[in-house]
Image (cartoon, rainbow, N blue to C red):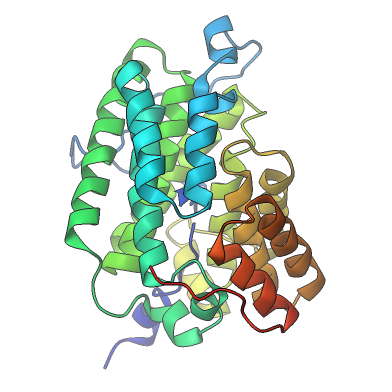
Length: 322
């Protein structure tokens, strides 16, 4: 029989990503393993008095038509088309880690959609919420996802060696660690590794926000992590606190709201995450508002139309066939 403490570690909350996504702790992370395919946190936090001119126009923080189009396709569940947009942009900007991390996000989103993770049926089902998907993820998707993460980290760490305050690199590494944590927790069910990655992503997000406070997409990760840990039992939160892992559900929802209001590429993802957490917390009016906005903005998405209908207690107008 599974140890109760171990069982509670099954609790997770979709954060992709995005995109997006997930962070958990204030403590530093031990990276003594030297695995080149994992992140390595660079230096100490530095104050950001100024952002260099090239950083001000960084693609992760500036609307780029090709990337915007790709994310629009991603949010309407047109995964191969989104991936083609990201791949074309990446081929023209081979030194930018954001292209690779967007490709990784497309594979993770597709697998989550295929498994029904991005739905209230999954999120409000306590058994699934605590124990993850039934079965195993598609090995092809996971291999492509992992390959894109390796390429992301190679590019990002190269940039950090040249400039430890490179916001593109910090943002890409935040997303890479957060997405891999989601994959480990939800799909692979490697929960202790997932918690390690949550802590790692937190360090990158804090470095990023110290340099670039307007990087509001990063709050998706911070908010998701606070909600995850804050949703655990009091005993489990006490247990995790010894490892520097803390959470606050209310703060998490506030942080998700910041991204939902002012984020860039991950704004719609923040909305769906906030809507699902609102449904779990029985904040029906907030959930309905967010899901209505998503269903209107992405009118061709069967996912958002179905989730809005469920939140209103209406018949579901679309059947998902991943």
